[in-house]
Image 1 (cartoon, rainbow, N blue to C red):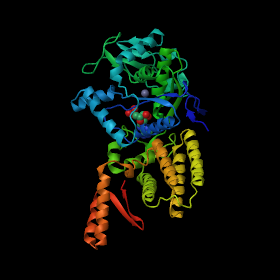
Image 2: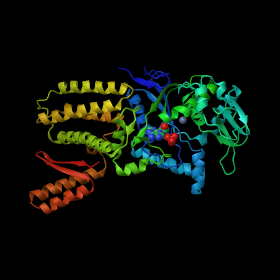
Image 3: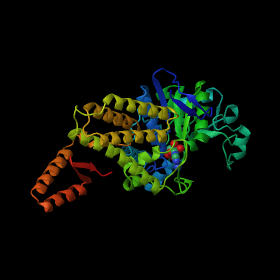
Image 4: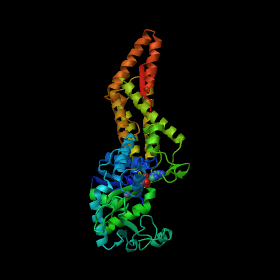
Length: 473
Ligand code: AMP
Ligand code: ZN
């Protein structure tokens, strides 16, 4: 099966065919950097990181752009409250974003542009929209003229009149129509501002994504993603802006993740029911958080609850144990005299690889892909159990498979046996010392070493083949 993606533009699962053969242009709306991001925001960052990895696994050259919104009302208010400047606030929370994203195993985007570094491109995009007759100036602000764009509402599937009925009309509006939205906002005292043909001011929120998407990826891109709350108005506005400016279709596949819920409600800053990713990372192992996010289909809602996180943590432990059991057996039970037929094992693994690919190709169904990964673990574990010794080819196939799956999902983490840090040698040395102490019946010393290692998060297990060790999550 080739890759199928559910496209919110057509509301259908469609075969994925990129514009340029072998290449994918992918834009994902990034965070507004006025605070730490919460674990609900982490959902798109994690799931679309996995989609990007899968596309790379399929051999595409992916250009993945995720922006930082570093100027908007929230940025300005927070900077005022903290007695700092908007650029300082942005710098601080971009650094914090990167720390948490790294801890969650999210790979840095190919490009991570900031709105404030792209003001000339934003101004030029607004100018083109205006030249094409779809924007107007009103007291130093510039608005998109929604009524001049009949296709408005295509993505959210609502007609202009329905949208109009739901729009808020505010007193003292400078807009001609309640549906119109700001492309440029005139300078207010104490706020950051840039020069423009319409006077000093700053960009509206939506325009940055249109400008940066075409700057870094071209006027028509393959994939654009974000949370489902961005469908309207943000993405609807992006389409209107980009197409009004460029006269070309903007995005070929629109992908939106479902909400992360807490007590059945959307986790959000405004409801106050949020847990920052930073706080979640203190409470739960990063791999468990990642596993948890991938345990549901990205378009379904997912409920953030301790039981789900515990299940995720035990899932990760099972995966890690399988790999450390493999490493241990490779050291102690490898023999080409083994009665295991490596070709038969490889054939079974190949079938599982096909099922994994089918799951990921089916609108990147990570929940099903994790299920296949556990079938792989089951096959490896039973093979380890059923054979006294195992051939080199078995270990190579099994370890390579786990590595390939983990390159896509990132839920198993680094392999301690292959780590080059001195830490492992130290562990091995202590294990050898403990073994010597046990031989000499110095059980006090042996217990002391076990406790010392436990303190460092290392668990020992004595087996007939010797002492196995693994790191706690
Ligand atoms: P923001 O910084 O608010 O623009 O949000 C960054 C990303 O997180 C956007 O793609 C939002 O759609 C997404 N998002 C916000 N809250 C949630 C949630 N509770 N569950 C899933 N995604 C969310
Ligand atoms: Zn955006």
